[in-house]
Length: 204
View (tube, rainbow, N blue to C red):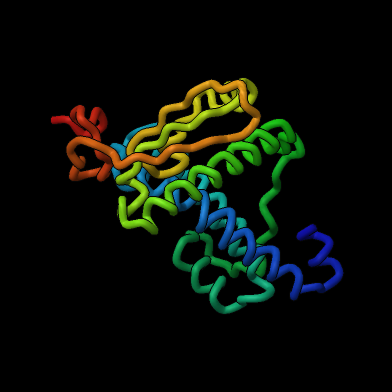
């Protein structure tokens, strides 16, 4: 779609697509979740290094896609991050192999985001009633059917929902049900997660 908009000089729709990607996919989702990894994980952790690599690729892609629209801004950014002695407007778009497209993984994350949205509604109800402040004061109990339960295998739902903990229970119901409780225990001074146990990530 981006290439089509470029070819048609349809910069209005191009801008709308890029803005939506930046505000919804990046800012409201990926950045929100990955702040914890960037701020709290050790500098040499594989997870943190992988996050920085992806952020670097994303930045390099975005400034090239935005270049025809934000010509001066993208040029300034490019000069700050690039060691090449040339202009952003002489660069080509990054090439992403077709094998990068993974429809099964895309579907999985669409479903995970739906689960996250239901959890967030439950969290917001508790925040609205002043029972908790930030989402990190929450502890979740989530009931999922077998399919969604298995889909969460290897996924830390508390990380996905930015809560202190999340317990997943396999249910026979097709409906997703979430109970949000106030997390109990001590607050870690580094990651701010609340637990009755010493934070394994930051224990001395």
